Image (cartoon, rainbow, N blue to C red; front, side):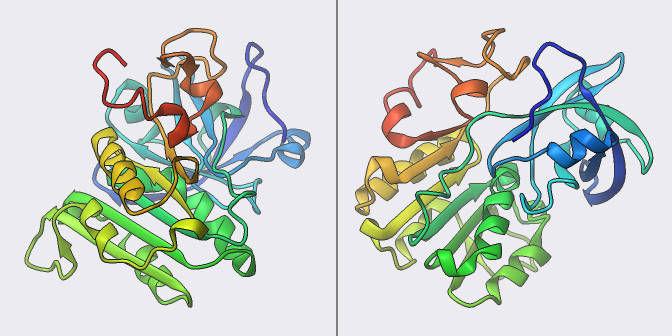
Length: 280
């Protein structure tokens, strides 16, 4: 894969289009303007890019597009901070800086021939979309695909059409959950982890991919272990205060690890002793 140098200038990226998901959430579709960089760029599902706004700053954003199409990079932006609020206002033709891809992605090579169990919460679905697209583009290489997504409020289910489309595919199970339903909600009411007890699992032939709020990931990993899936078959994507992307600044340190460099995807066998511990 090709990566912009950690200390050199970022590549220039142009906004090709944008999708407004909710009032405070959008997906930007970017293209590197340099033809050579664009041709060389490759990423793995689960990796992230650092996006930079001149005179404002940079922020790590997961790549939420199909790795089969690396010339068009999707990044879902939640307007919650100084940089992301500016990114969320960008329009077609605007240009920003981009470095990446960074980090360790999902273990899809070792998942071939296995069932995939994807458990996400809130905006945690974005870092896993590329993995789902990867599996769907190579459907014969994987077993059953189980997608479980939970949100706090029913209105937060911003990719409903995408989940409905996935649910129509063969050998695919999609279940949705909301803690606080509205009068339109017809799916599970409660926690997304409740759904783990309602789906068929083959513990010795499943790989679990988990992303979302840390308490949810902690609960999901523990429940999957209780259901018989071993620690090394459960993978989580963590989020910390990335600033450099290569482990230099130390802002994302988690015990002996730097999440930006050693993750953001980790096997439960490596980090189970760290998550949920005060100070980490």
